[in-house]
Length: 108
Image 1 (tube, rainbow, N blue to C red):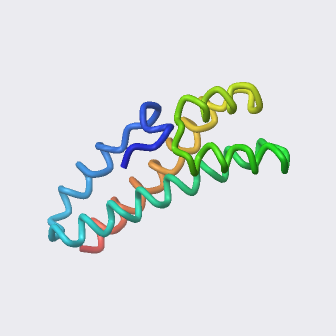
Image 2 (image 1 turned 60 degrees about the vertical axis):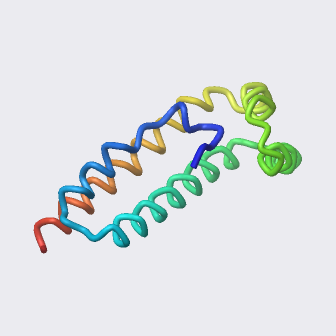
């Protein structure tokens, strides 16, 4: 799915690791959806933790309207270094996923 932050993160490498596990297409699809959801919620949590209550409402309004340019304009005004924070939480989550995949691969 294309999110306002999609240009900042790379997740194809996670899918490449999943491909090496010999999963069925249904399993890969399910895990891909879980990855997408986890990443999205992790990024939203990181952003929302940087905003005041009124700014959270404004951000969620922009998000619900899907106006990526407005979202970035707003975030760059309200949350200093937001792009770096998004990249960091995405990288941290991917690292956890890589570790989980390696562990699952050992068990299999």
